[in-house]
Every structure is written in C-alpha cells, then in structure tokens.
Image (tube, rainbow, N blue to C red; front, side, top):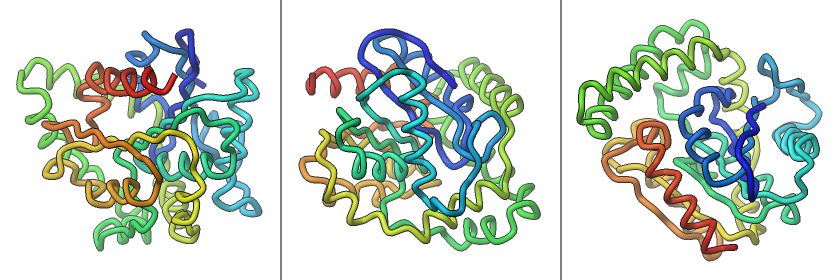
Length: 258
C-alpha cells in the first residue's frame, strides 16, 4: 500500500492493471499537498484480498473499506483512474458517508463497452498479450510526443514507466476478469445516488486512445453537479506525463470544496 504525505486524505484507485506502482509519479506529486493513499486491487500479488466471486463488483468496495480502516481514515476524497473510476463511482454510491469528494480521471462511462480489439484481448488475454503490448507502446509514443516535447523528458519518462511496470507486473487473465465483471454490473443508477462533489478529468479527445473522452463525459450528465476539466496535449496518461498539472487541478478542486 502507498501511504505518504500529510493533511486531508486522498485515496487513488488504480486502473484495470491493478497496481498502484504504475501511478507512482502522480502519487508522489499529489502527496506534496495532502496525505495520499493507494493500493493494489484484489486478486493481485500483494493485495491481501482475493477476487471473491460471491461479492461480485463489490469486492472492490470491501477492499476500499479495508484500506481506509487500516489507514485509520473515516472519510476521504476518492480519485478513480481509468477502470478505477468505475470502482470509485460504486464506492461513492454505497458509502456516501466515507467520501468527501469524487474525482473521475479518464474513467469509462457506465455504458462503456470494449472495442472489437479490446474484446479480443478480454476473450483470450494471454494469447493477446504480445499484440496488447505493441499497441500500448504505439499509444504511449503518440501521447509522449504531445505531452513531452523534449526528447530527454520522453526518455526519462519511458525508462521510469517501464521500470514501474516491470517491478509490478500485471496478469492479463485478471485484467480480463475485471473487465468482464464490469460488463456484468449495472452502474448507471449508482451515478444518481452520488452526493459527493464530483470532478471529471479527461485528456485531449484526439489523444486518449484507450477510453473515448465522450464516454468519460457521460458522468457530467449522470452525476448531479459534476464539474469538468480537460488536460489538453495529454491523453489517457495525463496524470503520469504531467503530474504537476494534474496535482494542481485536484488541489484547486479539493480546496474549493473544503
């Protein structure tokens, strides 16, 4: 578990790969202004919690409860990144007393469905792993060119990112299982139950090649009073390629809700 900084707590939920280590640059930057807590999703090595079929999607609710209890935090701002945004929506809907604010970062909308290529990955995750890695590198190159115009910054980012990925490997079968679980769970009605102040953050529509920005913007219609911020010149990895900018957006939003 990641737990650094001091002040008002912010819990950051990782994406479908399940590992907080992949978000390390953003977590460290956010921790300059507040206490930041993150964790590994159930089922992964080091999570301390299996994927209990009896709980369904609410295994993630149980995990966040356990994380907050371990950190001795009664109430926190919750930030869900990509797939983690779906988890954050569910948690804010069923645990309103524990959520002071909600941030959804490049999160699939509740009506999101995999593209044909993504569906092939989900159907045969291990066999599709080489193709998945190649397309992921292509997406990374496109985003880095826009977000990091200096070649030295691109090299530094790539080495750090690959290092985090290598030291915290993910499991394709588990990622596919999480996607299937989301597809079986209706989350649209949860949006109407959210009472926490909500911020929706996306990258540039032309640069997010993982989750369509139009899908993330569904939350603006579904969650009463939700606010919106765009990080232009970034895509799906804006919180990593420009962590200072991302932290500034969250700092301003959370300060306005204090």
